[in-house]
Length: 248
Image 1 (spheres, rainbow, N blue to C red):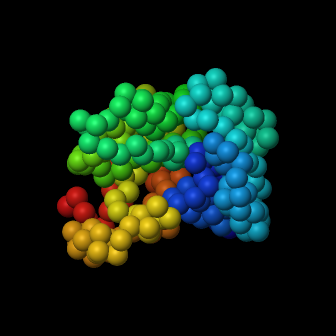
Image 2 (tube, rainbow, N blue to C red):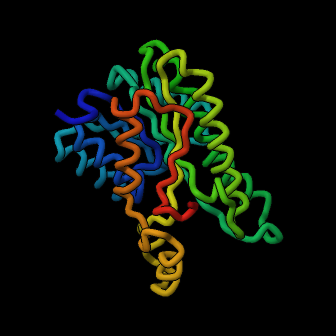
């Protein structure tokens, strides 16, 4: 029996990278998978197919995390389709990197709206069913730049730092209902996006990391699995840095 047998996962931004790895990892551990993406593209469908091949019950939802009413409707649909929401992973996010001197209001607003408001929208939407269940695990995908900051990413860093404060506050509010809320702060993770960086850039990043390598989406997925499962029932309000010691 898997660590998440019979539990339902709602994960946003599941079409690629870390979201894809989490969906597949959770499916392999017996979870039902309710997965969202902003569009119904081939990548999104392929992840769904992979999860189904592992024996998981899967349903895809096209949804914009920045839409407050749409997020509530999504949670209602998942409850109707699966009967419970046991784990929420707020994974959807974007970057609009540039120096603050050049950053437009739109670039700031887009990142805050999707990364931070999106986490608020979905968390609020699942609270009522989780409180009725008196059980649940909410996992917010932050970043090491939310802890340390990063030049050229003031909007992204602000959104991820805000997610950390949000996580800790939510954990204090809902702990008495047996609902846990934690954050994961990935470091340099090799995904489709970062893999396109020049080899010398990737080498330079790796040299700064005590473990001397970039992380993989599976490294993050394994941490999410721990936080979602009963192995972590006394862990809440924490930020786990999956960064190979980068911020040590």
